[in-house]
Image (tube, rainbow, N blue to C red; front, side):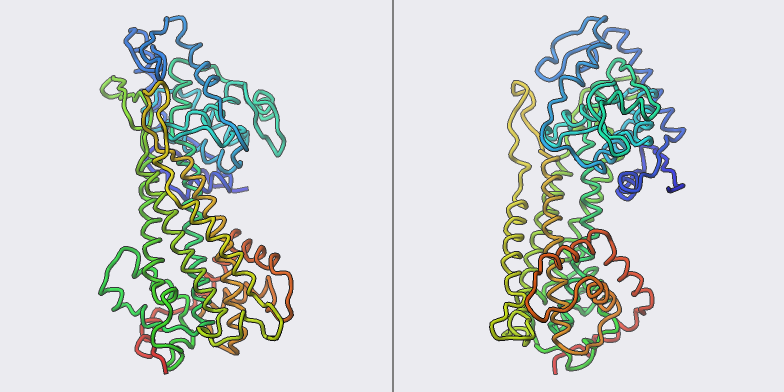
Length: 523
């Protein structure tokens, strides 16, 4: 059990912290400054509500009923109805790690001080998170104009309704709280709307997706480096002077990463490269991987700015003593950047698939057809091309933008939405398929290295090769390959591949990489 505690200030939450809370169950507390902002914001809500001024969702109805005034006696009861009436999500429930990410993201949003929720309700959400009471939240129902439906389900156990998981078992929301030693809260004015009106699904799951995507980018570059070794590729396209001549975002970083993985390889020796110019799936790696990295980094910056922003409508301005209607719940930048991530990962996948096919082709690699050492009627790795093609086709289908597909709702008052949670969810599906594609490249590239004969592999590549061979043996006679792919998929997914490569690279020196470019030319 970790002794780390995350202090939420409403100003500095990042993707890595969301991941630690969601997956490592790091406990969370509020900063003193966040508590003060929450109290100040709540005071404004209570004062203005008592004055009877029209405030959206506080003294009026919601959506198409924004013009309906509530009676003073209805104000508190209405907030529970807001949660109950918006609990309309359907389909399979979100994974526990996503629910935990939603909770920490929403609490941090409340800590910004624009929501007007009572400190009691915020602390009750924190207590639920820290105790491991995880509401069951169906995945389908949000169009991204705030994640109203899933957040309503997230709030249900807090008020004694719905269902929740606790210590691996499913209970009613009230029973889960009881078993955790907690009690339901009674919602005050504005609090039902505040619990629902945010983007915690899009941002919470988006944080997990981007963390996974950045790790998968690293794994994909490792797999590519293995292919470079097995193919005996030319490294001159990755000379720092080539990268400097076209300073596209991410390109030099991608080239440097590849070269670091290959540091110490005999590929740097004169005559090691077999061709003057390799196929573009090898030669253009830094351009494609670099563009993908740039897309991931921009998405990370965009999402982290949203993690620490106030998305509440209406928005409480404590210093001015005002509550203003607004559109801060709309997150087109997040949706658009995640769409770009999906497209860039799809292009990276295409490059990976083509490298694998070149390795299997004697015309390009100079190795036995389909990398079988037995020849004759043996299939070798050939049929994996069908799996690759199926995965790549699904991946490209998922990469098609969906953020422009929303339709007007609420009697056409809400005539715009980003579908951000759908974009986030399909990006997670893209990652799953890409992880399998990268696993297949690991398998194929390792086979090519074995067939090529004794090689001096780069430090990072050598560590990756050892990790692969600890999971799957070289292919001799034809055998079932799906289990091999699954094992390598898990090697990527659980972080083992990255950890073993990182450990090996600690002994590498930058000099090896930089001085080798003068030698990298075909014989």
